[in-house]
Image (cartoon, rainbow, N blue to C red; front, side):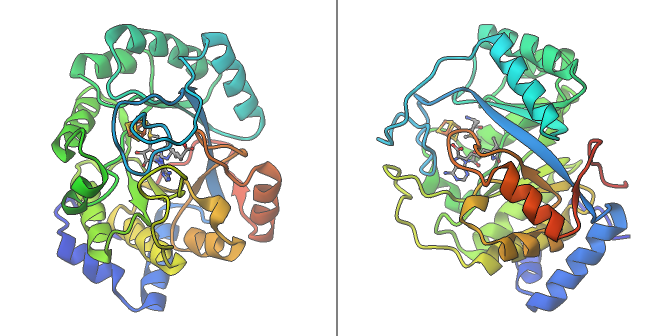
Length: 322
Ligand code: SAM
Ligand code: DTB
Ligand code: SF4
C-alpha cells in the first residue's frame, strides 16, 4: 500500500506533479483503489449560514467587505432554517453537511449558537462540518463537545504565495487554528485553491504543507478559483485543466487515505475534465446548485455525469482504509 508519510518537501511534491502525465495518473489511480472503492464518491452539501461583510481581504473571496462584489450581506441564519436545509441535503443524498460563516474569527456567543445547530444536524445522522474562520482552543473544544465531526480551514496556497492573496492574517494563524482543532479531537478538512496565478511550485508547496500535518487532514478540498467580478483575481489567467488534474493526482499520492474533494469551480469544467479529476483520485463533490454564494452544477447535471461514469453517491460516509 502507498505509505502514509508526513515528511514531504515541496521539492518532492513538485517532482511528483511534474511526472509524465500518464505515469502520474495511473500511479495515483492505483493508490486510490488501494484504499477506496472507485465506484462511489462522497456527496457533501454546503450552506452559507452567515454571508458577506467579512473583514478579511482574501483576494479570491466574494464575501470580503474589502472588495466591491455586490454581494448582499446576511446575518447568522435561524437555527430552524439551517436544520431544514440539512434535512433537504440528506434527502438529496448528501452524507455531510457543511456550514460556512464569513467571520474572521467568531466570538464565544456565535460559537455557542453554532454548537446548538451542530448538535441538531448531527442528530439527523449526517456528518457535520463548519468553517467559521480562526478559532481559539476552548472554542474548538466547545464545537467538539457538540459532536462536530470536521472543521474546515484551508491553507489556500503555498507559504511563499500566500502574501499575494491575503494580508489580514498569516499562514501561521491558519496552522494554529488547525492545531487547536486537532487538539480538541476534531477531524480536519483542509485544502486550497488553484488557478489564482500561482506556479506549479506553489501548488507543490501547498500539498507539502498539508501532507506534513500528522495525521493528514481527513478531507482535502481542492478548489479551482471561481473568478468573481470585483475581486482582485477577477481577471487572472485561466489555469490549464490538466494542471488541476496533476494537483489532484499528487494530493492522492501524498495523502492516500484522505478524501480528496473536487470542490469549487466545477461549473466551469467540462464533464471530461471532471472525469479525469475523479480518475486521478478525487472522491468527493459538493452537491446542489450553489456552493456558499457561487454556482455549482446542480443535481441533474451531477446525476447525469455520475451515471455516465458508473459512479454512485456513497450512502454512508466515505473513509479510506488506514
Ligand atoms: N471565513 C472562513 C475561512 O476563510 O476559513 C470560511 C469560509 S471561506 C469562503 C472557505 C474557503 O472557500 C476558502 O478558504 C477558499 O478556499 C474557498 N473559496 C472562497 N472563495 C472562493 C472562490 N472564489 N473560488 C474558489 N474557492 C473559494
Ligand atoms: C472549501 O474548500 N470550499 C468550500 C468550503 N470549503 C467551505 C467553499 C467554496 C466557496 C466558493 C465561493 C462561494 O460559493 O462563495
Ligand atoms: Fe472569505 Fe473566509 Fe477570507 Fe472572509 S476569511 S474573506 S469569508 S475566505
